[in-house]
Image 1 (spheres, rainbow, N blue to C red):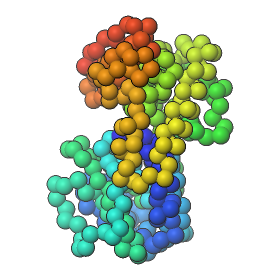
Image 2 (spheres, rainbow, N blue to C red):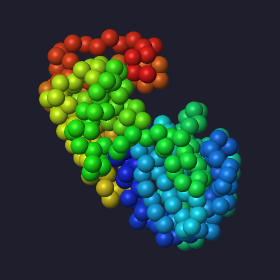
Image 3 (tube, helix red, strand yellow):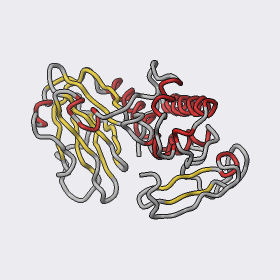
Image 4 (spheres, rainbow, N blue to C red):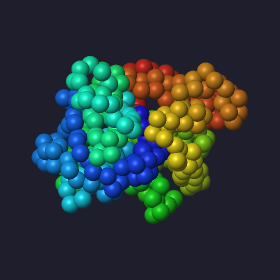
Length: 287
């Protein structure tokens, strides 16, 4: 799933390649992709893209005097830049193509989604805050005003485990499954630790890991073409998706806990004092 660093990189890429150009055609291909009907998708056609902004894991394209085109790539969505776009209209079907945006230059981008769970979402709205998922977003962890005291205040009273708290978009915007694993590994913290139980020094370590991990991932992705962002993310991960491999810090074996729809990875030596976490596939601990 694209998270804050990848969406930030896509924002920078589209700012360089899209801003100032006319959106000639916005063509939904998959029935499920468009989540709004008023304004209609045609309301952005013929307008120039003026801004590209990130809202947590949402990507918003503003147009001159008109609506915003807002994208959430969900778990298996992606943006593919094409210059030029293929000739002829795309054919609806069972392929991954969900939506195509064409510019006056002949270039544009496709939104694609792998798998059968179609969750990729596109909205045409007068303001991004009209989207419930945007309106409920918590603070951005890379914002200038997101300091250690603010993180401590967010976690105070949180009886959930820290892994689940970090993934809650209404608490902190932009962190998903992969980077929450990476942040907790960098902080040397168990994913099962109760958020409200963190001592001040643990909050300090978590804050440092949160900002450092995300900023580092953003920096590694900066300037990359959209098509290279997935491989860059994977290559930069130290524990997430690396079950059975040696921890790059201590050499212990990276372990996994599986749930009904996701999994987490951690290093026992670095994070749990050598203790293995119970792997209950149907656990609800992180929901």
